[in-house]
Length: 248
Image (cartoon, rainbow, N blue to C red; front, side, top):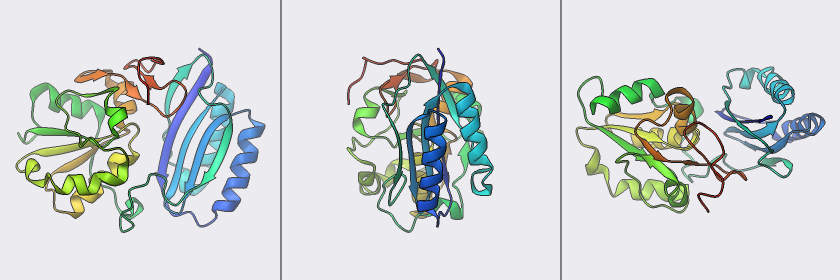
């Protein structure tokens, strides 16, 4: 497999999106990359595929901007690029929640690393003895491809449905440690901040999402594949394409 696929995001104020769009479009096309970069006032969301050299070059270019210096892309491999073309798009939000008061850049919710979460799930409680509730913040068709064992989800069709559904279930979290998770970290970060804001006592986001968990600890306590938004459709716990097993 010779194609490197990366995904990463960063919540940071972007006041120069038009200039960024022009620069990143030209740079990605020159490198022969395919994929999508989303630019919103709240930050950047990146999905790219290409050769090892091209991916390293675009990551170095992004990190040269102080706003993106700490980007930590998650990687997987495939035989062919899972995107047909290269697009840099301007959006209102890099992930639509329709909660404008949430600004992750102003302060993140606590996160839990993959290895620590595995330890919690191995013994059935966190370090303080609280039961762990895994909360899937993804859409219904993503959950259908695979999720953590005994995870709770709200059967949502789009992420903007998450806050009102959550409000109906606040009593479920009493006495528990809630770990919100998603594909790559972006939705569960917003979800965890929202949950803190409405008074959930112990809430963490899974750092780097399911893809980072697969990368660091494999598929422990997870069943099925992970839906991804490209032509692979899903990846297995070894981060290999699982195309054909799930359909949106």
